[in-house]
Image 1 (tube, rainbow, N blue to C red):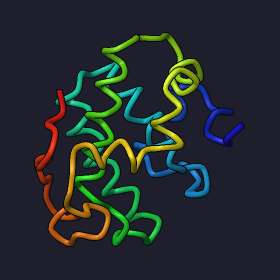
Image 2 (cartoon, rainbow, N blue to C red; image 1 turned 180 degrees about the horizontal axis):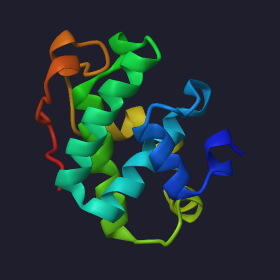
Image 3 (spheres, rainbow, N blue to C red; image 1 turned 180 degrees about the vertical axis):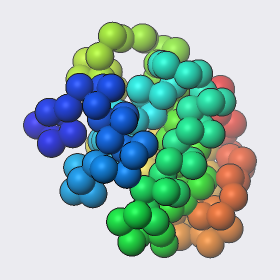
Length: 137
């Protein structure tokens, strides 16, 4: 069990937004959870706006501004939205259990959408690059 799961969704969301979440708690799974919470509560477009601005503030607050990647962030939100639409569930634990690819094979999932290396591209870090293979639905 990851540490972020010790917090309820509202506390997790609020601590992240206020840059008070321990950086050690913000794992890949926590990033997926944040996307799940925001997509469920606000819809995908507002989730993108919220998470991008909050993530920039968070990485700046913890001195890791170089880790922000706009394309990766938006792609993760859109991937989460795809799986929410496939089979909605009421809690994140059930969601990640039903769709473990989001946690364990995320790079493989994005490889269906991008041939360009969005993880190391300076351009992908600064602006959202539309998929050059399969568009997000």
